[in-house]
Image (cartoon, rainbow, N blue to C red; front, side, top):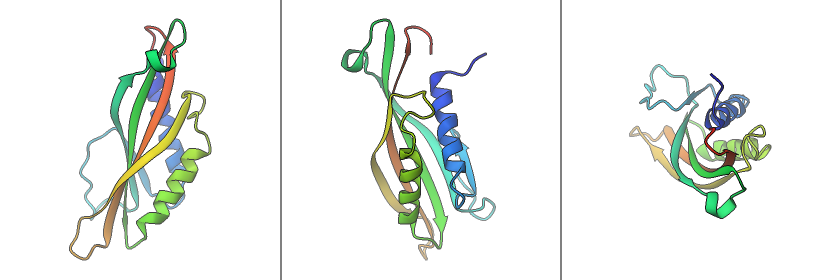
Length: 140
């Protein structure tokens, strides 16, 4: 079975993040609580967020249009989390079409940073991207 547009967009994001040499691993669409004693940091998680029909806003005859939030959460240890905001922002901005599967993909905000240990050496941040994409009506 062929991949859906959403699957192709997620695969593109995973590939882009894996291209950032400082990130050790990228996990997509899995709700995993990282074991910071086992998983090498920095690590990035990519999560599907809310999606809404945008056909009336950016519609084209016989096509469905969507606005989809994607969250990239990155965890580091003993590093400045702001470095990763810049690295991820720049890498994602290099191709806002996500390999031709999206109309646009822009960062719309961030949440955090979060510290999970008393010393504050393990830090995380969530970067929120909004993806606009479309496909033929009834074919994802």
